[in-house]
Amino acid sequence: MSVVARGLSHVYGELRSLESIELEARPGEVLALVGPSGCGKSTLLEIASGLREPSAGTIAVEGAADAAGRLSHCAYMPQRDLLLPWFSALDNAALALRNRGVGKGEARSRAGELFERFGLAGFERARPQELSGGMRQRVAFLRTLVAGKPVLLLDEPFASLDAISRAEMQEWLAGTLSADGRTVLLVSHDLEEALYLADRVLVLSARPGRVVKELRAPDPRAPDRDGAVTDPEFVAAREAALRALHQGARPGPTPPGGPAGAPGARWDGRGKGEG
Amino acid sequence: MSRRAILRLVLPAAVIAALIGLWQIAASTGWIAEALNLEAFLVPSPAEVGDALWNNRAVLWENAWVTLREILIGLAAGILAGIALAVAMRFSRLLRDAVFPLSVAVQAVPVVVIAPILVVWFGFGIWVKVIVVALACFFPILVNTLDGLRSVDPEAVKMMRTLDASPTAIFRRVEAPTALPYFFSGAKIAVAVAPIVALFAELAGSNAGLMRLIVQDNANLEIADMFAAATILAVIGVLLVGLTALAQRLVVTWR
Image (cartoon, rainbow over all chains, first blue to last red; front, side, top):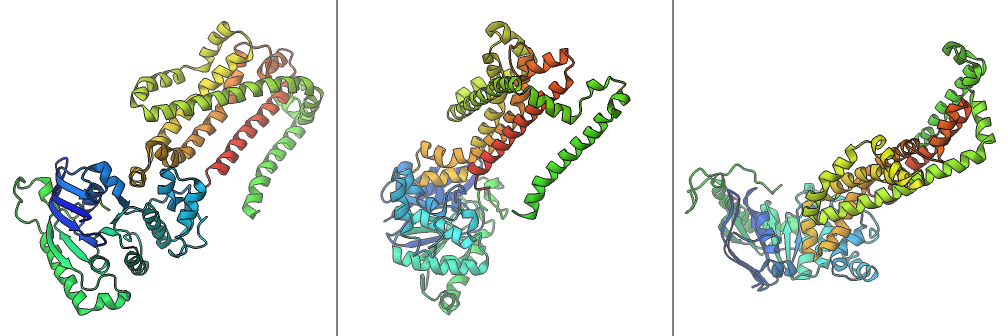
């Protein structure tokens, strides 16, 4: 297994953001996590990446359970592209190599090789602020890939894009992931995106996030996105996920150990730390 | 150049030229002297100031060079010390807590008080002025650079950590570039303050420099010569501010 979480919980002050998460991702599998805002999806990725420690339970990435080990196996693409405005697109993409002490020339040429494939040829020297939203997102993804880690953590990669560019980028990412074959944890609040890109989808409840349903995607990363998402099987899967999402969003019975009416047990529709 | 860029060069020049022209007329016809009830020689016209600039060029240049050196060396020392301390405080919370209040206290003591004391200790030479200018420039650089270093996007730091960045790499590639525009805000203040402070320090005791020249001319009622020295000071001020703005434009290319 590439990523394994057992009884993973996270408490942030008074706020219980994740509770008893169990998940497994096989090597090369794309696993999506969907849930309402504030259900701790982003926290889960930060824990997986080694930026945070769980409050209880364990998580191992490529067999490494400690934060430093997870950090060395995961490449994390945050919600915002976070491209550094003082570097060119090429230097942004090459950041991981430069951080590891690779010389400027070599880092640039290694990152530059991928620009063509990512539809970014000719924009190597452009500053991020000169690029469109979709291009920025591709540079950010490229930066994540160039890091060369076996596990990719994608946190709502296309949340900031308009509907049309988002559909295009999903299709593009589907192609890239099929060709790349890395293990991916994808966080999304968009069921369609999750069911289209992932092999399996885990539906999380409102805070504290628990896995309430697991779904198998009917036709992961189909070349024809528009055809795939209108397929009856896809629509049925999406409805099942939506139902699970709605059930999970209701302030259900108080989970064991949680005091009734505590801030963590309520769902107010928005969470801290998630946009 | 765009129409707007041309206007931005032409307009200030036109305003200055118009004012000089008005002054020339008002002074050469004796209106100002009459209105102030003064002898005419106490109200020099721009032409007379121009003559003074040319005739005293050797003395003016000699003393301007002294003042300019005080300003530049003081600025350089203040900027370097400000950056160094800001970076050190970024890496050591303990140092920041220990030294920051002292920096504020030093800043709060006026130059007019410090300068005469330093003159007693170090004499009339250039170093008192350099120290005072450095002290005055150091604080805006320190405060602004420190602010800049602390305004780093924490998400960008997380992103860098997942890309195997060491603290040094994070400093070089994220924190330092983030702080640069802030540093330049501080530098603009420092550059505006430095000439004033240098003149105050010269006033406290000096054997050369533009302020010393102005005091001498004042005693001799050489008003045109005073205007000539003031003109040179104005040019120095404009050049310093202009060069700082230019440096900012060349370095901070992403804004």
